[in-house]
Amino acid sequence: MRTHLQATATTQSPVEPPSPPASMRRVACAALVGTSIEFYDFFIYGTAAALVFGPLFFPALGAVAGTVAAFATFGVAFFFRPVGAILFGHMGDRLGRKRTLIYTLTIMGVSTFAIGVLPTASTIGAAAPIALVALRALQGIAVGGEWAGAALLTAEHAPQGKRGFYGGFPQLGPGVAMAMSSATFLVADLTLTPQQFLAWGWRIPFLMSILMLAVGMYIRLKVEETPAFRQSTGRGELVRFPFAEAVRHEWRNMLLVGGVLTMTFGFFYIAAVFVTGYAGSTPGVGVLDLPRSTILSGTILGAVVHSLAILVSAKLSDRVGRRRVVLAGAMASVVIGPGVFYLMQPGSTVTFLLGMCLLLGVLAIPYGPAAAYLPEIFRTEYRYTGAGVGYNLAGILGGALPLVVAPPLAAEFGGIGVGFYLGALGLVSTLAVLAIRETKHVVLDAPAAAPVAG
Image 1 (cartoon, rainbow, N blue to C red):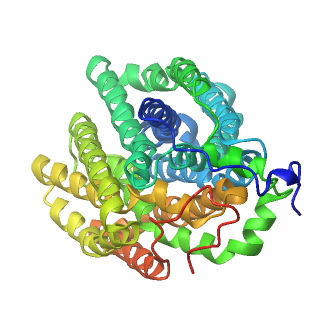
Image 2 (cartoon, rainbow, N blue to C red; image 1 turned 135 degrees about the vertical axis):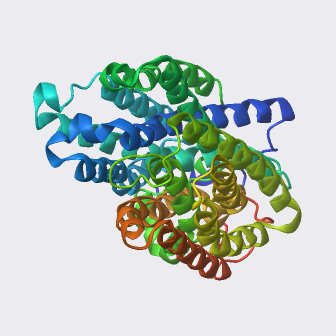
């Protein structure tokens, strides 16, 4: 299965030194900007689904069913994310990390811009929701290939002992993107009438993505390919079918990684999407009846806490180990999940803001070290594929399914039902972490490194 393009270099190719500090700062910036742009494009869809997509694209279903359908289209992307992980993982492991990340960024930017110009159901009828779902699927494919590449970009450039810290930069992307998305919608909400926002104002965040695409492309083109990939290529360690090799050697680790990150996805998307509707007056899910400006402001505040917690946990993982930090966050989520919804029940601004900070803060504890932890688990020749597939399996378990089950759980048991569901996801992640070993001492560019988890 291996393609020995340069077999003679197997024993002669020296290990490249880590990137110098100036180059590392450029790599960290490229990873942060790239993931921020990709997840901004991904998240504005979720905010729009909670606020306006129901009446615009599913008017025939009525207020409640239309809102549920809009949430379901948001979840469609999660089922396409593993497809993107396999497709771009193959490219990333065969052609390189840098080139693949250019492709993912382009696909995401173009599909997001297309949503911004998409006619609604009142104009083209049933073709509107069909086109919306198709574009959402493209977003899922693109973001499915993005995370692993951005994680490897920093992890494979970073010096030993600082991999967790530098790996925290791509992890900041979702929090930054959430704040950007909410801020954009907040400005639109404060400057436009409800009628204007529903008619055309919601399109502005999507159209802005084309400008962000240009910025992200410029920055990523400045980054060099990673030393670990160059070393692996020089040793002739490319494999013909990375996904097949990853499944053959690392299927257990990919499943465990999916379990480890399930709670991070569950907490994040419940906070980013479901709570946006739950805290307001969205038909079918609205309970707290808070103003839209309060909800969006709470999301921005939570995203700030999320980002700070990521920096702390990522750096801490270099000192005490990835596993300990991830385990601590997973265990804390078992209690915080139901506790947050109990706290938010009165429907006051203060309790809502505190609840959002807790939801987004606790998930950041295991998420911060993940960009170092996952690359350390998989071998270089199928690292992009293995890390990406495991990560995006968690997206289905923790991203898509909670958004489907949360509305009926809230209708039947109130918000506390959703909270206990999050607690159950935390328990799943806790058990998965216990089955994976520590990895912080792994050398990423060592020849044919043995698997370390299991």
